[in-house]
Structures are given as structure tokens and as C-alpha cells.
Image 1: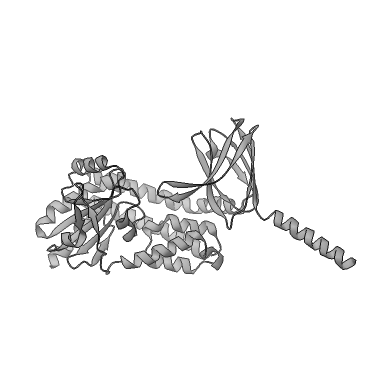
Image 2: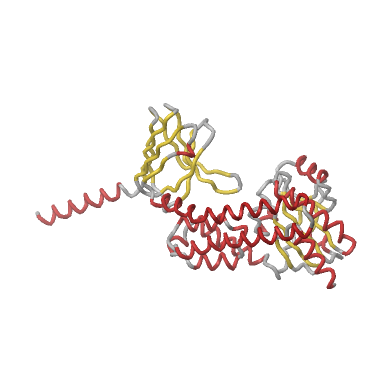
Length: 368
């Protein structure tokens, strides 16, 4: 009988533990009485995935569930503008906010969210320095002489490198952190595959097996194929008139080609276009050309931007936004992105902006 009682107690304790393995979000909202709270996840490229929802009654809501590991999620109210994000984990989380200013919500009960706030305190000075340096670079591009543009670009790139090094250092010193892994994903544009591979290798197995890191591993594999020194992948895509253009056919007989990923809706791309135009005009007679690959989703906007910015080289696109097979082939995660490729199809440069593009083109053609 004693053994039976002990087994029953053990079973009850196990049941009790199982019941609390998931999360419970207890929310209190002012400024609204009824409605629906939405739980979403940002999956990239302006796309969201609905995870769950709950009714708001008397300004209160309760949401229960379970997740495999901590992750950043987005909370919004159906029919209301504005949202906020926080780190969800399997714990009891208290959410207190106003319907019209969710970004000010007070969130407690998630250790991962607390870590995220601490991480922001750590990285914010680097972010701010990088923001200021990039802003000064953009101002110089508008009216400054080439010397000032190049100087500001060097400073901006150097400060950004310090920021990304700080992120990498955080990831390596917090190998069990899902927050750190997520921050690694947010810096993909600026990191080489070697840096990513080293960071991923430093993670604990539990973190290294999450979907975020699996996605980064897939990116590493693609980045290796389009690294400097590699043969540029060939492709075929239609121009604005619907005529197929083969990349290597365009390359034939040229000394250099810039494969330029951009879009009409991309502000930084449009700011960079005058420098590409300047380089093209100066060196096209020496065997330099450009192939623009657009990530637009509206054909008329794409064509208008080509005309407005005087981009007189060849352009291609499937006009499907981020669902562009060439962009995926070249591991494009943000734009503008460019690859400088020699006449043999070998990649010799990447993400050359401002005066750096003209300098690299000039150096290469002078040695030919």
C-alpha cells in the first residue's frame, strides 16, 4: 500500500510539472474593452506568421500554449494600428499596456525578454555610433567631393565592423542564448560566411539546432559558393520587355560586370545609383558594364526608376519582390547588394559602395 501511495504521489507531481511546461500570458489592456489579441512571428521579407489569438474581455486576455524554445514574437490587436514585440518562453508572463501604445507595454515573467533588454543596453552605443557614421556618409554622398565621400565611407564601414564584432563577441560569450542567436540573424548582411560559421560553431547544441541557426547554416552553404574567388553562378531572367537575358552571354567580351541587386522601393539603392551611373559612364568604353537585378513587385515602378535614375544598362527581374531565384542564388538578404565579376566569371568584389566601386574598377582595368 505504501508503494502504491508513493507512486500516486509521484504521478501527481509529474502531472503537475507537465501542466506548467508551457506558457501563459495574462494581459491587462486599457483603452479597449473587447476585441482580439494576435500573436505573430516575423519570418522575414515583410512576412508574418500567425501563431495564436485570444479574445479580449473587459480589457483582459489570457493566452496559453507551448513553444520548443524562447523566441521573439509580436503582439497586436486586430483592427488596431501599432504592435510590440517581446521574447516568449514557457513561463507565466504578465503583459500590461494600452491599446493605442502597445510598444510601451510592461512585460514581466520572461527571463529571455529580460536578457533581450540587457542586450539592447549593451549594443545600443554601438548601434548609435554606426547610425551616426552612416548618416554622415550619406550626407557626404549628396554634395561632398570624392575625398570626403571616401573618408566618410571608411569611417562608416569601420564603425559598422566594430558593431558587428560586438555582436559576434556576445554570441560567443553566451553560447546558450537564443537572444544572441537571433541577433546573429539580424546581422547577416554584414558578416562573412567564415564569421558566421565560427559563431555558429560556438553555440550550445540546443541553440544550434533551432530553426534560426539551421537557416543561418543554409545561408553559409550558399555564401561559400558566391565568395570572392568563386565562379559566379549563371542564370537567365527576363528584361523589362520580357526578353530572356543570360548572364554569361552579357559577360562575354567584357572585362568587368557589376551584378547589382536593387529595387525602386529601396531608398539606399536609389541613393547609391548615382555612383553606379558615374562608374558606368566612366568605364563602359573599357569593358565595364552593369546588370541590374530588381527585387521590385510592381513593373511600372521598376521601369520608372530605371528611367528616372538614368540606369542605361541591362536590367532583369521576375517582379516578385523577395521571391527572386537569382537573389537566393547569390545569398541576397538585403539590398543594395552587388558583386563585381571579371571577364572569366570570377567574383573579385562584393558590396562596393560609393567611391569604393569606382576605385576597385579603376584598379582592375588599369592592370589589364
